[in-house]
Image (tube, rainbow, N blue to C red):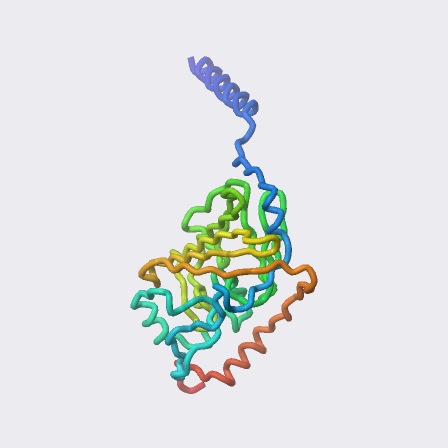
Length: 266
Protein backbone atom coordinates (compact mmCIF):
# COMPACT_ATOMS: atom_id res chain seq x y z
CA UNK A 1 0.00 0.00 0.00
CA UNK A 2 2.78 2.43 0.92
CA UNK A 3 4.63 1.65 -2.32
CA UNK A 4 1.47 2.39 -4.32
CA UNK A 5 0.95 5.75 -2.60
CA UNK A 6 4.60 6.66 -3.09
CA UNK A 7 4.45 5.72 -6.77
CA UNK A 8 1.34 7.86 -7.28
CA UNK A 9 3.04 10.79 -5.54
CA UNK A 10 6.11 10.52 -7.74
CA UNK A 11 3.96 10.35 -10.85
CA UNK A 12 2.04 13.45 -9.78
CA UNK A 13 5.23 15.40 -9.11
CA UNK A 14 6.70 14.31 -12.44
CA UNK A 15 3.56 15.45 -14.26
CA UNK A 16 3.73 18.82 -12.50
CA UNK A 17 7.36 19.26 -13.45
CA UNK A 18 6.52 18.40 -17.06
CA UNK A 19 3.74 21.01 -17.16
CA UNK A 20 6.03 23.65 -15.66
CA UNK A 21 8.72 22.81 -18.18
CA UNK A 22 6.29 23.26 -21.03
CA UNK A 23 5.12 26.70 -19.85
CA UNK A 24 7.65 29.47 -20.52
CA UNK A 25 8.01 32.07 -17.76
CA UNK A 26 5.87 35.16 -18.17
CA UNK A 27 7.63 38.49 -18.47
CA UNK A 28 6.02 41.92 -18.52
CA UNK A 29 5.25 43.03 -22.04
CA UNK A 30 7.45 45.86 -23.23
CA UNK A 31 5.57 48.81 -24.66
CA UNK A 32 6.02 49.72 -28.27
CA UNK A 33 8.38 52.69 -28.22
CA UNK A 34 6.89 55.56 -30.23
CA UNK A 35 9.02 57.08 -32.95
CA UNK A 36 8.74 60.45 -31.21
CA UNK A 37 10.55 58.98 -28.19
CA UNK A 38 13.82 59.29 -30.08
CA UNK A 39 13.56 63.03 -29.57
CA UNK A 40 14.14 62.60 -25.83
CA UNK A 41 17.55 61.00 -26.37
CA UNK A 42 20.40 63.47 -25.94
CA UNK A 43 21.81 66.15 -23.67
CA UNK A 44 19.47 68.77 -22.22
CA UNK A 45 20.24 72.28 -20.97
CA UNK A 46 18.00 74.33 -18.71
CA UNK A 47 16.11 77.20 -20.36
CA UNK A 48 17.05 80.59 -18.93
CA UNK A 49 14.52 82.04 -16.46
CA UNK A 50 11.47 83.73 -17.87
CA UNK A 51 8.86 82.72 -20.42
CA UNK A 52 7.27 80.40 -17.88
CA UNK A 53 10.52 78.82 -16.72
CA UNK A 54 11.00 79.25 -12.96
CA UNK A 55 14.34 80.54 -11.78
CA UNK A 56 16.29 78.41 -9.36
CA UNK A 57 16.47 80.45 -6.20
CA UNK A 58 12.92 80.68 -4.86
CA UNK A 59 13.31 79.77 -1.17
CA UNK A 60 10.25 81.63 0.03
CA UNK A 61 10.79 83.08 3.50
CA UNK A 62 12.94 80.23 4.78
CA UNK A 63 16.02 81.10 6.82
CA UNK A 64 19.10 79.18 7.88
CA UNK A 65 20.24 78.46 11.44
CA UNK A 66 21.86 81.92 11.62
CA UNK A 67 18.64 83.68 10.64
CA UNK A 68 19.88 84.45 7.12
CA UNK A 69 17.57 83.95 4.12
CA UNK A 70 17.99 80.67 2.30
CA UNK A 71 19.07 81.04 -1.33
CA UNK A 72 19.17 79.08 -4.58
CA UNK A 73 16.47 76.50 -3.85
CA UNK A 74 15.69 73.95 -6.56
CA UNK A 75 11.90 74.13 -6.38
CA UNK A 76 9.34 76.95 -5.94
CA UNK A 77 9.17 76.92 -2.14
CA UNK A 78 6.54 79.66 -1.84
CA UNK A 79 4.00 77.56 -3.79
CA UNK A 80 4.23 74.51 -1.49
CA UNK A 81 2.00 73.91 1.52
CA UNK A 82 4.17 72.45 4.26
CA UNK A 83 3.05 70.30 7.15
CA UNK A 84 3.91 71.82 10.58
CA UNK A 85 6.39 69.01 11.22
CA UNK A 86 8.57 70.33 8.38
CA UNK A 87 9.02 73.63 10.21
CA UNK A 88 9.86 71.65 13.34
CA UNK A 89 12.51 69.85 11.30
CA UNK A 90 13.96 73.17 10.11
CA UNK A 91 14.30 74.32 13.70
CA UNK A 92 16.08 71.11 14.62
CA UNK A 93 18.36 70.74 11.57
CA UNK A 94 21.95 71.94 11.31
CA UNK A 95 24.17 72.02 8.23
CA UNK A 96 26.40 69.14 9.29
CA UNK A 97 23.48 66.73 8.83
CA UNK A 98 23.23 67.38 5.10
CA UNK A 99 24.14 64.22 3.13
CA UNK A 100 25.79 66.31 0.41
CA UNK A 101 28.72 67.01 2.77
CA UNK A 102 29.33 63.25 2.85
CA UNK A 103 29.32 63.26 -0.98
CA UNK A 104 25.91 61.57 -1.15
CA UNK A 105 24.22 61.95 -4.53
CA UNK A 106 21.18 64.18 -4.93
CA UNK A 107 17.73 62.71 -5.50
CA UNK A 108 14.62 63.86 -7.33
CA UNK A 109 13.10 66.38 -7.29
CA UNK A 110 16.32 68.28 -6.42
CA UNK A 111 18.07 66.81 -9.47
CA UNK A 112 15.30 68.07 -11.73
CA UNK A 113 15.72 71.62 -10.46
CA UNK A 114 19.47 71.85 -10.97
CA UNK A 115 20.85 74.19 -13.61
CA UNK A 116 23.46 71.73 -14.87
CA UNK A 117 22.65 69.57 -17.90
CA UNK A 118 21.55 65.95 -17.95
CA UNK A 119 21.74 63.28 -20.62
CA UNK A 120 19.16 60.62 -21.57
CA UNK A 121 20.23 57.35 -23.21
CA UNK A 122 18.20 54.20 -23.95
CA UNK A 123 18.73 50.52 -23.29
CA UNK A 124 16.50 47.57 -24.19
CA UNK A 125 14.57 47.58 -20.92
CA UNK A 126 15.18 51.03 -19.47
CA UNK A 127 16.20 54.65 -19.89
CA UNK A 128 19.34 55.94 -18.22
CA UNK A 129 19.49 59.55 -17.07
CA UNK A 130 22.94 60.88 -16.21
CA UNK A 131 22.97 64.21 -14.35
CA UNK A 132 26.12 66.30 -14.49
CA UNK A 133 25.38 67.32 -10.91
CA UNK A 134 27.39 64.83 -8.85
CA UNK A 135 27.65 62.36 -11.77
CA UNK A 136 24.33 60.96 -10.60
CA UNK A 137 22.78 58.13 -12.62
CA UNK A 138 19.10 57.11 -12.57
CA UNK A 139 17.63 54.06 -14.24
CA UNK A 140 13.99 54.27 -15.32
CA UNK A 141 12.57 50.80 -15.99
CA UNK A 142 10.45 50.69 -19.16
CA UNK A 143 9.71 46.95 -19.36
CA UNK A 144 6.33 46.98 -17.64
CA UNK A 145 7.48 45.96 -14.19
CA UNK A 146 5.91 47.45 -11.06
CA UNK A 147 7.54 48.79 -7.92
CA UNK A 148 9.08 46.47 -5.34
CA UNK A 149 7.38 45.91 -1.95
CA UNK A 150 7.32 48.96 0.36
CA UNK A 151 9.96 47.45 2.64
CA UNK A 152 12.53 47.48 -0.19
CA UNK A 153 13.85 51.03 -0.11
CA UNK A 154 16.79 52.75 -1.76
CA UNK A 155 18.27 56.22 -1.60
CA UNK A 156 17.46 57.07 -5.24
CA UNK A 157 14.12 55.27 -5.09
CA UNK A 158 12.70 52.97 -7.77
CA UNK A 159 11.63 54.55 -11.06
CA UNK A 160 9.29 53.06 -13.67
CA UNK A 161 8.18 54.75 -16.86
CA UNK A 162 5.65 54.36 -19.64
CA UNK A 163 4.79 56.01 -22.91
CA UNK A 164 1.47 57.84 -23.00
CA UNK A 165 1.09 58.87 -26.60
CA UNK A 166 4.31 60.72 -27.35
CA UNK A 167 4.89 61.66 -23.72
CA UNK A 168 7.12 59.94 -21.18
CA UNK A 169 5.58 59.48 -17.74
CA UNK A 170 7.79 58.44 -14.82
CA UNK A 171 6.84 57.45 -11.27
CA UNK A 172 9.49 57.08 -8.56
CA UNK A 173 8.76 55.60 -5.11
CA UNK A 174 10.47 53.41 -2.47
CA UNK A 175 12.79 56.15 -1.21
CA UNK A 176 14.61 56.08 2.09
CA UNK A 177 14.31 59.06 4.46
CA UNK A 178 16.43 61.90 3.09
CA UNK A 179 17.31 65.12 4.99
CA UNK A 180 17.72 66.89 1.61
CA UNK A 181 15.12 64.88 -0.29
CA UNK A 182 12.98 67.87 -1.23
CA UNK A 183 15.68 70.51 -1.61
CA UNK A 184 19.42 70.57 -0.96
CA UNK A 185 19.80 74.30 -0.22
CA UNK A 186 16.95 74.83 2.21
CA UNK A 187 17.60 71.28 3.47
CA UNK A 188 13.97 70.21 3.24
CA UNK A 189 13.49 66.51 4.02
CA UNK A 190 11.34 63.79 2.53
CA UNK A 191 10.08 60.57 4.07
CA UNK A 192 9.64 57.01 2.82
CA UNK A 193 6.22 58.15 1.59
CA UNK A 194 7.74 60.43 -1.06
CA UNK A 195 6.36 59.89 -4.56
CA UNK A 196 7.64 61.86 -7.54
CA UNK A 197 5.78 61.99 -10.86
CA UNK A 198 7.51 63.33 -13.97
CA UNK A 199 5.85 64.07 -17.28
CA UNK A 200 8.21 64.73 -20.21
CA UNK A 201 6.64 66.43 -23.21
CA UNK A 202 8.25 67.72 -26.40
CA UNK A 203 7.11 71.26 -27.17
CA UNK A 204 9.30 71.82 -30.25
CA UNK A 205 11.95 70.13 -32.35
CA UNK A 206 14.55 70.57 -29.61
CA UNK A 207 12.49 71.81 -26.67
CA UNK A 208 11.01 69.87 -23.79
CA UNK A 209 8.90 70.53 -20.71
CA UNK A 210 9.15 68.44 -17.55
CA UNK A 211 6.11 68.68 -15.29
CA UNK A 212 6.90 67.56 -11.74
CA UNK A 213 4.46 66.49 -9.04
CA UNK A 214 5.79 65.86 -5.55
CA UNK A 215 3.80 63.95 -2.93
CA UNK A 216 4.84 63.34 0.68
CA UNK A 217 2.03 63.41 3.27
CA UNK A 218 4.63 63.40 6.03
CA UNK A 219 5.92 66.88 5.11
CA UNK A 220 3.40 68.32 2.62
CA UNK A 221 -0.26 69.10 3.24
CA UNK A 222 -0.98 68.60 -0.46
CA UNK A 223 1.03 67.63 -3.55
CA UNK A 224 3.19 70.32 -5.11
CA UNK A 225 3.36 70.78 -8.87
CA UNK A 226 5.65 72.85 -11.09
CA UNK A 227 7.49 72.55 -14.39
CA UNK A 228 10.81 73.34 -16.06
CA UNK A 229 11.69 73.96 -19.69
CA UNK A 230 14.74 72.38 -21.32
CA UNK A 231 16.49 72.76 -24.66
CA UNK A 232 18.50 70.05 -26.39
CA UNK A 233 22.16 70.90 -26.78
CA UNK A 234 24.36 69.46 -29.51
CA UNK A 235 27.47 71.61 -29.01
CA UNK A 236 28.19 71.68 -25.27
CA UNK A 237 30.31 68.81 -24.06
CA UNK A 238 28.78 66.85 -21.19
CA UNK A 239 31.32 67.39 -18.41
CA UNK A 240 31.98 65.11 -15.53
CA UNK A 241 31.49 66.55 -12.06
CA UNK A 242 34.62 66.93 -9.93
CA UNK A 243 35.24 63.99 -7.64
CA UNK A 244 33.95 64.64 -4.14
CA UNK A 245 36.14 64.08 -1.07
CA UNK A 246 34.01 63.83 2.10
CA UNK A 247 36.96 64.76 4.31
CA UNK A 248 37.34 68.04 2.42
CA UNK A 249 33.65 68.93 2.25
CA UNK A 250 33.09 68.01 5.89
CA UNK A 251 36.05 70.10 6.99
CA UNK A 252 34.83 73.10 4.99
CA UNK A 253 31.40 73.07 6.57
CA UNK A 254 32.86 72.57 10.05
CA UNK A 255 34.95 75.72 9.58
CA UNK A 256 32.14 77.86 8.11
CA UNK A 257 29.11 76.60 10.04
CA UNK A 258 29.64 75.70 13.70
CA UNK A 259 27.69 72.75 15.08
CA UNK A 260 24.27 73.56 16.38
CA UNK A 261 24.56 70.79 18.96
CA UNK A 262 28.23 70.67 20.05
CA UNK A 263 29.30 67.91 22.40
CA UNK A 264 30.81 69.34 25.59
CA UNK A 265 34.49 68.65 25.98
CA UNK A 266 35.17 68.41 22.23
